[in-house]
Length: 129
Figure 1 (cartoon, rainbow, N blue to C red):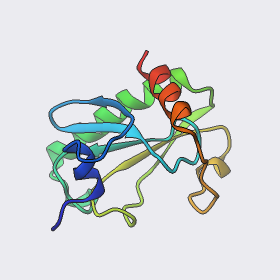
Figure 2: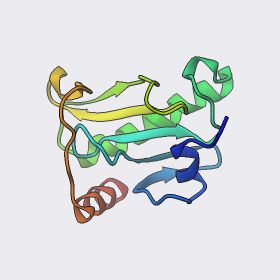
Figure 3: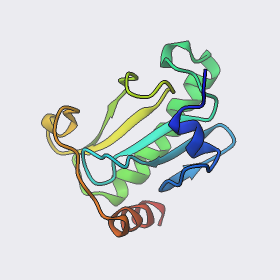
Figure 4: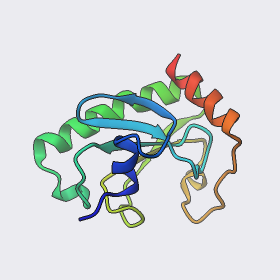
């Protein structure tokens, strides 16, 4: 399997707006967000399908995602953080954390926001405070 775009982000070959990272996982802002603060949580080990991730890593991934969701929720006004795992667009397991106020806010068919780099940087800074 060739390197996914997420592996290239993990390896710092592509820049991203990192929220947090440890030895096993990384969280960064989605550059095609459904909402401001839309964050992707990705294991550093590239596995295509989430249910192919070994159990220990799977549980740790969700624990990391919970920690990131709390940071996003604190920084971005919303009712909840919606969660989606679709897994069709990039062959690398990832969890979408989307600030939502209504179920329609997590419609992946909806047009994506177009944010300027300074908006991404402001969001990244606010979440990381």
